[in-house]
Amino acid sequence: MANHQSSIKRIRQTNTRRLHNRYYAKTARNAVKVLRATEDKEAARALYPKVSAMLDKLAKKNIIHKNKAGNLKSKLAKHVNRLA
View 1 (spheres, rainbow, N blue to C red):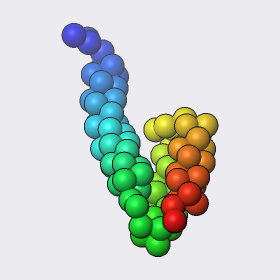
View 2 (cartoon, rainbow, N blue to C red; view 1 turned 120 degrees about the vertical axis):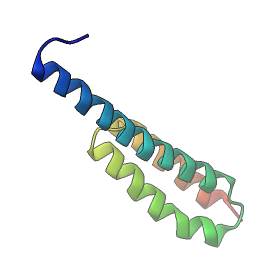
View 3 (tube, one colour; view 1 turned 180 degrees about the horizontal axis):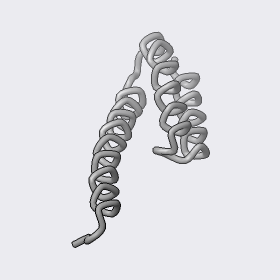
View 4 (cartoon, rainbow, N blue to C red; view 1 turned 180 degrees about the vertical axis):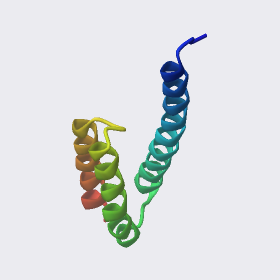
């Protein structure tokens, strides 16, 4: 166990941030799953900007890597455009 006041506080902060980041990353993953499962083109077209913005925000806050966000957005755009 940590002995210094600063390291005890750092552990508390890290745990809080970890839980916060996990929540938003999981929310984004669920949104990506919902968009991938969508077969209706209009619904997918309406959902894509929201999911894209969510991924951009996660990348901006370094919760996910910016290239991962870009790759996911690219694949989702292809999926939306492929729908008939």
